[in-house]
Length: 100
View 1: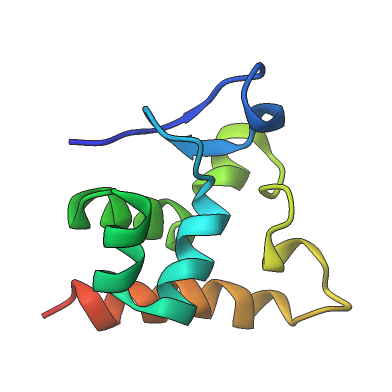
View 2 (view 1 turned 90 degrees about the vertical axis):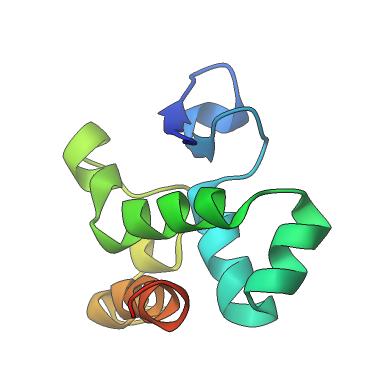
């Protein structure tokens, strides 16, 4: 199973999918905009990889692990979007594809 890691030497230490240069924020945003099948095929990740990233965001693991938002995360700028609505995006993505 894929893991979300933070490597200070890769993408500024942002949470990424292990073995890929995709941030959690990129994955969740991509799933929301493109859908599961197109995004996973275009970026060569598995459905399980996408689920792990969605769960990480939905459960606010970034705040638990490092006490900070992911860079460029829609959740990090309350002037751009309401914080609860941002996490709602991750929750909606997860519910749409994996909660049955």
